[in-house]
Structures are given as structure tokens and as C-alpha cells.
Amino acid sequence: MKALVYQGPGRKALEDRPKPKITAPTDAIVRMTKTTICGTDLHILKGDVPTCEPGRILGHEGVGVIDEVGPAVTAFKAGDHVLISCVSSCGKCEYCRRQMYSHCTAGGWILGNKIDGTQAEFVRTPFADTSLYPVPKGADEEALVMLSDILPTGFECGVLNGRVQPGSTVAIVGAGPIGLAALLTAQFYSPGVIIMIDLDDNRLAVAKRFGATATINSADGKAVAAVMKLTHKTGVDTAIEAVGIPATFEMCQQIIAPGGTIANIGVHGKKADLHLEQLWDRNISITTRLVDTATIPMLFKTVAAKKIDPVQLITHHFALDDIVAAYDTFADAAKTKALKVIITA
Ligand SMILES: NC(=O)c1ccc[n+]([C@@H]2O[C@H](COP(=O)([O-])OP(=O)(O)OC[C@H]3O[C@@H](n4cnc5c(N)ncnc54)[C@H](O)[C@@H]3O)[C@@H](O)[C@H]2O)c1
Ligand SMILES: [Zn+2]
Ligand SMILES: [Zn+2]
Image 1 (tube, rainbow, N blue to C red):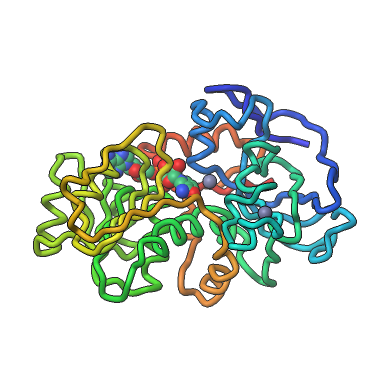
Image 2: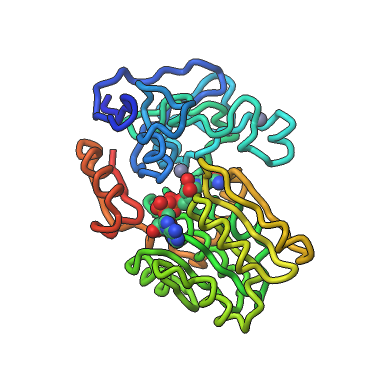
């Protein structure tokens, strides 16, 4: 089969690989139909993710059809149309019983990281019963690819952890696919104000179309003053960090209102300062989270009911044969205006 293989920092290629086999009774083999590329795959290619070793097939998102199941799989059978969660969960360990699937002692984020992933013609998915979801009849496959990772991430780590409320004020720093997923799902709660902050005017224009009430390009270094002006000098009730660098986490600390919540989504590789000398008396909360994908079933319903339309996040299409070009397009988003790219296997 064809598969996109990480060959070490800065190197990747479409290779011929053997079709995966069932290795545990709880496994399924899924024939991929649609997959995509995540910002995290770009982090891997930079060498930022040491758990992902050269030789690994990348990808942790996608939809497909079950080819074969192990003898212990009871919820699915060959021919079933399924969505693959980016997080594998055994369903039995203490963390899984608390719906903290991302910390599953036997699974977690392993696909396309510690085990071979979804950017291939076939993938072996461990713990199939508790890590796959049935695709409803008539559902749009490409829309559902957005439910493997980015929509649950924006919703769980940003909106739920950030306690977005009806009428409240929200700022989302970073208008990449994750920040935009937070923007779409924040609107379930009808906040009064949603301010999107980014350096890329194209992404800010997309945010406006997706329902942002105001956008700020922070390139001039004056974003904090602009947020204060928009919120009558109080700041925001929820500040969602969706970039993953010290400057944006510190910006969240400068714009948070008394009683507010800073919800960090970004993956941070460097230490960021915490200004307790300014925040100690402000009754704020700071949350962090690795996406659990526990909300996938709920998000399915919101898509079916047309409360959100994830297809809006898709900007480009490629065949698996052209996945290297898909990576180039995705990595050069400022020029190509890429958000999510769909790869058809
Ligand atoms: N917590 C989790 O479970 C989880 C899951 C998935 C992704 N992530 C992380 O979420 C973050 C966002 O992911 P993404 O795929 O949207 O990334 P992305 O790189 O596509 O988007 C980041 C956005 O931030 C903007 N930006 C960069 N520097 C900025 C600055 N100084 N001020 C304002 N905006 C700035 C960029 O223009 C870009 O639009 C990443 O750090 C990613 O690794 C976390
Ligand atoms: Zn991802
Ligand atoms: Zn578990």
C-alpha cells in the first residue's frame, strides 16, 4: 500500500509499505477513504515530537471503511463506515473511565506518533470498539474528517475549558484551523462578543465570515489596547490561546477580565511567563488540556442538525499520490490560504 512516511527531521516521502495486520484482538484494519494533515504533523516534521520516530506513517485523522476486525471487536464489522478519533482509548483504565481518553494508559495520542497513522491506504486502529465512531448514513465524509481532531480540540480545550457563556466576551488568539474550530463551536453558547486575533489578514477575513464580531491583526503590537477598547476597558471573560508561543499566552494574561478563564490550547515548546504579580487578585482560572475527543458523539449531532458546517474549513483537495504537494500547500498557508486539505485515498 501507499503511505506517507516520516523519514527524520525535514524529510518525508510517499513509500510502498505492507498492508497492516491485526496484532491484538481489539484491533481493526480500516481502509482509508479521506484523511487530512494537521499542524501537529508539521511539528513532527520539524523534529519537535521525539516520540515519533523515523519510519513512522503519519496522520491521526480520517474516515474509512472497516476491512477486518479482531476477534474481540463487537461494536463494528467489516464494511462499516467509521470515523477515526485522533486519540485511541482502551475504555477500561482509570483515565478512560473519567473520559480523559488522551491520558489512556494503553492508548492516548499514539496514531501517527507511536504507531503508524492514517495517511495511507490502510491503518491498524487499536481498541476499535472505543476509538472508532459509526458514520451516520448520508453524512458528508469530508465534513466528518474535521471531527477526528480539530473540532473536538477547539471545543474541549477552548470552549468547554474556557467556560464560554451566553452574552459573555471571548477572545481567541490564533485563527488557524484550531482557533477557527473554537470560533465555530463557541457559538453553541451565544457569547455576546468574539474577538479573533492573528497576524494573517486572510485568516481574519475567514474568521469574520465564521461569526467573529471583531478581528484584530496583532502585527503592530497594539492588540491588547484594541481588545481593551472593544470591551470597555474590562477585558474578556474567556481568552483562548490557539497558537502555542509565549507571546500569545502572555497576551491572554493581559486581556483577561476579573473572574475570567484563560484556556490554553497551543502546544508549547518553550517556557512562558506567568504574571502572578498582575493576576493574583483577579479571580482568574487557567486551564490546559490535551484533546480527549470525548465530545465526538455530541459534535456528530451538531453537524447533522446543521448547527455547524465543518466543510467551511476545507480549502484544498488532493489524491494520496499527491500528498507531498498537499504538505507543501498546507505548510505555506500564508501564500496558499490553506486551512484544511482533504486527501482522498
Ligand atoms: N491541546 C491539544 O490537544 C491540541 C490539539 C491540536 C493542536 N494543538 C495546538 O493548537 C495550536 C493551533 O493549531 P493550528 O493547527 O490552528 O495551528 P496553525 O499554525 O495553523 O495556526 C496558528 C495561527 O496562529 C497565528 N499566529 C502565529 N503567531 C502569532 C502571534 N504572535 N499572534 C497572533 N497570532 C499568531 C498564525 O498566523 C496562525 O494563523 C498549535 O500549537 C497546535 O499544536 C493542540
Ligand atoms: Zn492533530
Ligand atoms: Zn484507557
